[in-house]
Amino acid sequence: MTKLSYETRIEAPAERVWEVLADFGGTDRYNPNVTESRSTSDANSGVGAERHCDLSFGGAQVEERIVGWDEGRSYDVEIVESKRTPPMKNPHARFEVEPDGDATIVRASMSYVMNYGPVGWAMDRAMVRSKFGGAFQRILAGLKHHVETGELVTDDIKIDLKPVRALAA
Image (cartoon, rainbow, N blue to C red; front, side):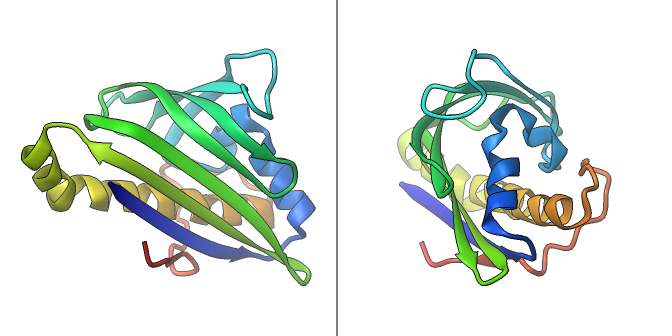
């Protein structure tokens, strides 16, 4: 199993950061990897909320569902269906918000198992891990930029990745 984890510090109260993250269908406001997102369930937050995302690379799409929710603190997401993404089993992501004085620490992690045994393992080492790691760095950098400036983030906006730190897996 591969696990990737990153964190960043956002200069805003945890309540504000959570408000942005909890709008599950609105990830395209801060995630430069997503060109369009929308809720596909009656609920837009909490366990069972679902969304569709069109990704900014190669026509990829994902359907995601919240499977764990701790109001104001964290949520867990599973990828229910994906098109034109790497072949993997059990893809799971987690987002956590932790107050840090007047600021907020946000952690994002993803875990998955590649299909195809040794071939999948080699694909993961050669390119998939790097691609997903870069995508998660951009998500946190985009979230930081959006919350701190109020600007919508797209794949063509210049965002600073330096404040995003990789955590030991």
